[in-house]
Image 1 (tube, rainbow, N blue to C red):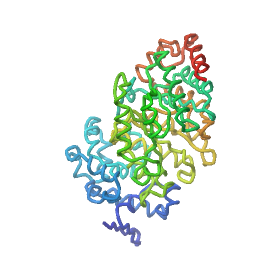
Image 2 (tube, rainbow, N blue to C red):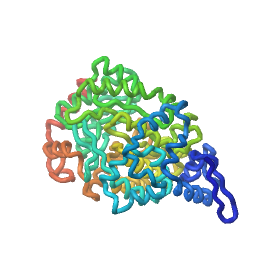
Image 3 (cartoon, rainbow, N blue to C red):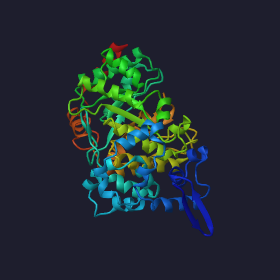
Amino acid sequence: MRHVRTFKGRSYTFDNLKTLLAKASPLRSADMLAGIAAESEEERAVAQWLLAELPLTAFLAEPLIPPEHDEVSRLILDSHDSAAFAPISSLTVGALREWLLSDATSDAEIASIRRGLTPEMAAAASKIMRNQDLIAAAKRCTVTTRFRNTIGLAGRLSTRLQPNHPTDDLRGIAASVLDGLLYGSGDAVIGVNPATDNLENAAALLHLLDDIIRTHEIPTQSCVLTHVTTTLELMRRGAPVDLVFQSIAGTEAANRSFGVNLSLLAEARDAALSLGRGTLGDNVMYFETGQGSALSANAHHGIDAQTCEARAYAVARAFSPLLVNTVVGFIGPEYLYDGKQIIRAGLEDHFCGKLLGLPMGCDICYTNHAEADQNDMDTLLTLLGVAGCNYIMGVPGADDVMLAYQSTSFHDALYLRRVLGLRPAPEFEQWLNRMGIFDGGNALGKGVPSPRLLGAIDKLAREAI
């Protein structure tokens, strides 16, 4: 369907919904690289104007990729809940924005329409929102998940303890785990990106993390962020797998470039569920996403980076994950050029994910060749804390020496918890208090943490070598 509008004597034509969404998207280098960005701020404003007037039903009538050619499109259409959509079916994109921000709309009503929204509807609404709109609307969307603790409750902020090591040295990883625990990090997951993706190495990492968690009765979960096929084989061999990790994207072709499809993800989830390792719940999947991944695989089908990212959330939603996070600035300045673009993308991703019912976290990060610095990350960190982000990363010194990028540190999580009055997951908080790490509130304790904890982690690492 063509969309036409005349403004100041000039006619603007957008050939289809895909083009309209791309031209309405706030400026980012990924869309410029793909050749689909608006050519001027005036064209962008006209596209946003037209998008605001577009009925939500248009997204059901015009799939961005024909479903017969793309399993993500089929998933989006097949999983659409018409009953949940009914209360908002008469709205336009602009009216949806107003409805989400209205005091007359309850948080429960927003939650009730999640399955009636497609990712493209959420992406469209985000494109006509200011940053404060993205924060205010996301704040209203509480999404709670459970494995060995409860993540996503209001007033809580969890962290992924990320103890990566450039050579996967077990003692080095154990030292980083201890460091993070002593700063109250690790309730979302203790998750290692392995430097090498072989079975023996991944198994050794899993056993180390499992021993730490079991020995000290830590109410959290572990994950080695290896490819899903590696994790499947590890489960077959009896390795202690808590969560299944996989990077995902918003098109079938992009997921194929990651070596996955929906049936493989379903197989992995079923295998993890069969282990029965969760004590409080059965959310066993961990997904990471990021704007630009489909473009980098030449698998975006002319869809803008932010809409492709939102489509990835349909994939995640199908598997009831414990954790989803956008690794927002990781791919580089070719996709998000500077701090302003990274901040905007992080807020968009968090809003869209939460609106669609996902337990969204964010790796608040940038590469060293981007036009960004840690002050930009402080800004995004604070804004996401206000927006109710489920979890952030905890990296020693905020500098991941294995993946070679800048993220957030254990200290950053403490800062955000203090200034916003946020607390860890309740079960993990009780453990922190019991171990003398926290003082009974959200601050570090003044006493000496348990000598048993201090000594035993190093012992486990020595024995694992």
